[in-house]
Image (tube, rainbow, N blue to C red):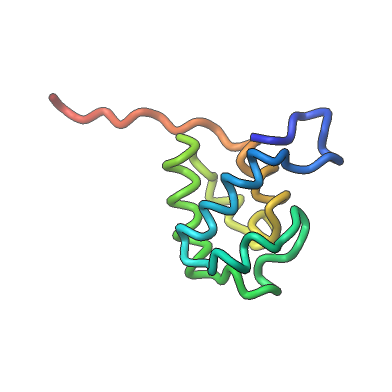
Length: 102
């Protein structure tokens, strides 16, 4: 997404922020509140994300970006800010296409 390996201090770019904010709203967060948060504002402390909404967000992220978030990464710190989400997405492996019979 927005953070390349050598740019870890920069944070998500504007497009990545828009995309992540959209996913938060789709997961149930209030749009007006989501628009006001910065890349390192804590989503849990601001009431925009809780453990239930986090699971919904995982599903939306995996579907949108066609990746799989490993179970070991299901830690609140990986979902606590838009920047943390961006870094998580950048390091997740792509999902494998499902092999369904035709």
